[in-house]
Image (cartoon, rainbow, N blue to C red; front, side, top):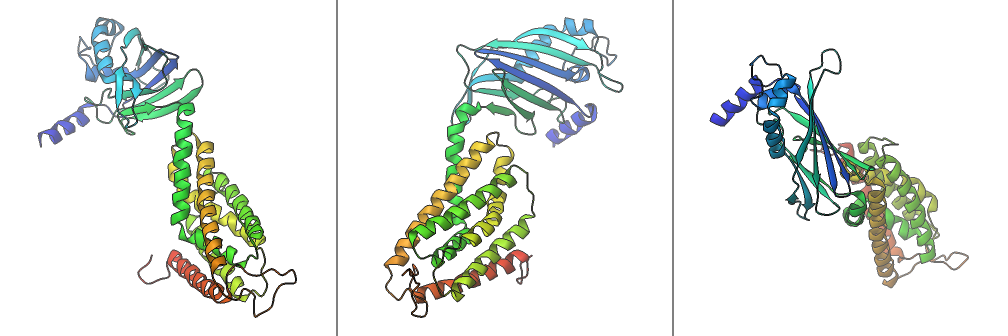
Length: 376
């Protein structure tokens, strides 16, 4: 109860639209920080307003320099180490340089304070963590936008405390192998648990006469879904995910129906490519949230797509071996193609699987359209 009352009192006393910005520049082992905040934020947090007129004068700021330095060093901390669990260590010793009071930037703006700090790490930095709790004790609504500029090139931003009190920055060169491996795993997991995509690939498999044809069909599917996956993930193509999922369901039923009616084995490259474009949009929707905050989007996309292909290849090879090992007639109605090619699966198995895939695809379509009882 007391904590709630204290929070309410702080919200009433604090001014609205309280914000600050900070820029952390790393150059080897050197760290330079520039903090820009509203003068009123300092007055609310520290006893700097000697004449109690609510306005921070240059003389008052100069007199309170030591107080400001202690406060900033306590509330704005920079670490030179981040372990695999995200814990921070190796706190850098910050020293205050310039401390200036600047006039408003425009009409209606407030005066602001510009503080520069610096630190020197024992050796060249390869990661960095920033913990910022500036002014939140006097104004819980305060926000700080932090930008890290790494060795004059790479740049990343963070919003304190909305995105968290600690900004753990790892350069892209160091993150790239881990990001790649993580998205490869994500791609494998997605395809192995994506029963709709697997059903479509297996339906294509049932129509093919030989392994070489399967390779061509899978390649067409890969090229297609890779293209739309990249376009949609980079926000260059937008399609309602619900329509995409419904179309994927129908693609399963359609290809399975063709298999049921098919009299000669054939490689369905056209269907693989055409419907592959739609399946790529489905892949994109599954990884969109993860990519939203990922700086290494290209690396992530390549890793995810490779994972999908590895999982898909494993399933195709296993299915091909299993279907080829089954006994039974592999021609349609006892007729063999002119080149001697036969279906991969026995006739009875092929028909059972085709009917099962049709029913599965139609069920998915009705479910995703919200046309099943109790499904919205």
